[in-house]
Length: 124
Image (cartoon, helix red, strand yellow):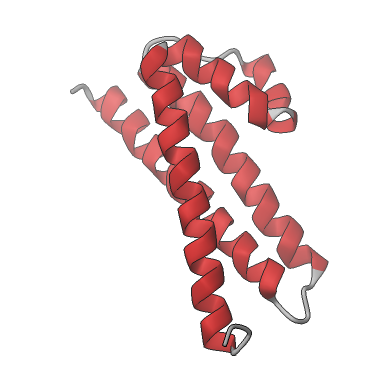
């Protein structure tokens, strides 16, 4: 693996981790009793940035870089655009990649919500 590919791989991993952290943060923000809007919007923004930049780095890593002008469209229409960008970069494996990460994000969200609810006495 070349140093450029290794760098892209590490960057993609970092953006994926931000995406998962944003999902966990949104779960905590939703169950927070005070629920400051800056916290909720901040985690949602981090989640969105993680999605867009993961798509950018993954498509560049696969040799089909996403045009710079697509980034705001992916950010605004990410539930649909992520599938299109993944298809463009990886074909069928891209759709599987998005589905697996989508499932894992849902698991992280719900496990974080349950753990936070148990810790704060909101559940049981």
